[in-house]
Length: 125
Image (cartoon, rainbow, N blue to C red; front, side, top):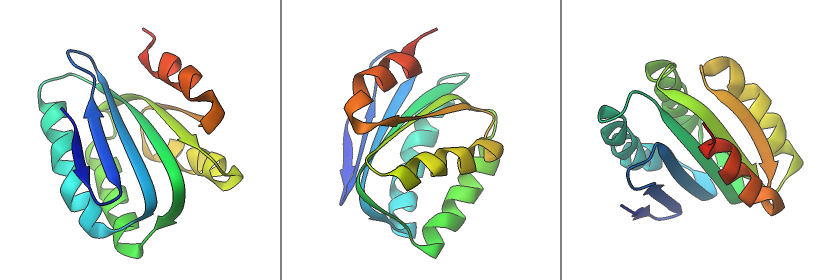
C-alpha cells in the first residue's frame, strides 16, 4: 500500500516484511509525524520488519526531525531486522555507520546504482 507526503514515499511489500521509504530533499519533524504511524501500523502485524531507505537528492534533517528519528530508534530498537540505506553521496554512507549503534538492525549502505543489490540483500532470508 503506497503512501505519499510531500517528498516521502512509503511502500510495503505485499505479504512480506520489507518496508521501503524514499526520502527526497530535507526531512522535517512533520514528515516523521506522517510516516512513523504508517510504519508502526505495519510493525503491529509482524515480529520484525526490514527497511530499505532510498535517499534521492537528500539534504539531511531538521533539528526536529533528528529528535523524531532518535525517538523512533529507541522505541523500535529490536523491531527492525535489517536496514539497507541507498544513497547518492559519500556522507550518506557515513550516516549508515552513525545509525548502526542506535538500532538492533544489521545496517548496510549501497550506492544508488546498486539499488538492485540493496533490494536483494534486505529481502534475503
